[in-house]
Length: 225
Image (cartoon, rainbow, N blue to C red; front, side, top):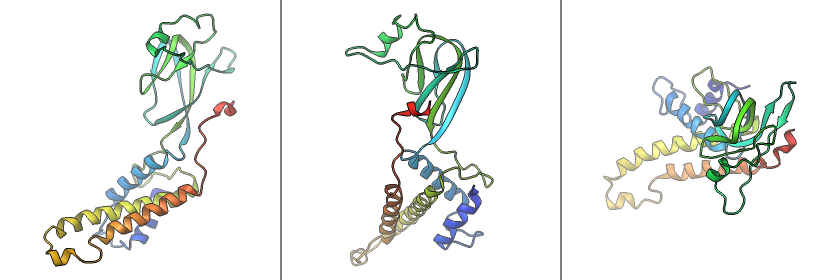
């Protein structure tokens, strides 16, 4: 697994910003950029994660902070068997508030679940069990120099282009602030802010990397069983 320190060095070489005593983009900048890139790329391919907890007569839980999309939901019985829970489905004209008051599933061993309101997982009736969520989550953030890049190897190139794009935007902002004092003749040059053009090119390269890999299929997760 590649460390953040080594991956950051790749970006620094691409930027020709080797004087780390007086960098154009300091380590905090680059860490911010990679974390923004990690959040964005998760919409294409997220990290598969599991969240487990013991519940006693609970009707609602908070989803993990890094939650992006829900996969299968399990309960573990007294014989340590994992049982796939059933998702509650709304019928025409029904609301989750009405569903929560329904007693249709009281005869079931375990109640059905539904994802509502935002950031919550709710149960039609109180649940007492060990619960396990398999879910699609955001990639682990880079916290410090000891952090590891947990993304698939192919994704590293995509992250690199996003970092370079954001670096160009920072420089472009500075250039734009200076150019507000240009004369009409100065501002009529062929390219007022070539850094923005370079940033757009880096973004295209990022999209090309993503396009060359299939988007994560988040349907049919029953295949995880």
